[in-house]
Amino acid sequence: MIAAADFADAYVEAVLAGSRQRARAVVDEARAEGVDIRSLYLHIFQPALREVGRLWQENRITVADEHLATAITQALMAQLYGEMFVGAGRQQRTLLAACVDAERHEVGLRMICDLLEMEGWDTTFLGATVPSDSLAAMVRERRPDAVALSVSLASHVPRLKRAIAELRGALGQETPVIVVGGRPFIDQPSLAARVNADIVALDADEAVERLKEHFGV
Image (cartoon, rainbow, N blue to C red):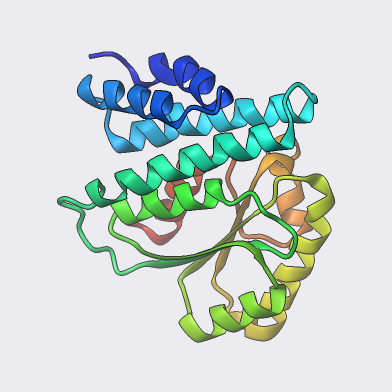
């Protein structure tokens, strides 16, 4: 069986070319070789989007190129969604995920939600640009066990910090476990303490494992 990582370069080339058909062909070939969905997420989609983000930061591709690569990946994730839950047991744990205020890079949080649902969790994915007051209201209403928040740019970290402060101010001791991630935390994990988060994760896999460890599931 070919490892998932062996398909990563071909997938990067496909999404940078803006070809959904080529990207789908890579996924289909990987699946035919026995690569499971979790491995697709962690060893093809996730590293590919990190590479796309790096190229964008270095001005080697445009914002439009980055958005197209992300859109192709999200479309493929949506197509795979229905295959995820065969045999998944229910863990009775819940997570709410959101990008706060101006943050638009949501695919990492979508990956966390999908991977947790494969583990039997019930997740609520709010997506991009969620106002902090709306986030606090939704958390107060749904009372999830955990909240996942991410940022892609260092300039968005202060807004994330304010959103966490608003959550803790609104819910006090009933505030769910807060897990944060995104490129600024990869570059500087100590930021998690500065924004008053409970858990920092450097990728989707670590987020899932840290949450499972925290709740003993």
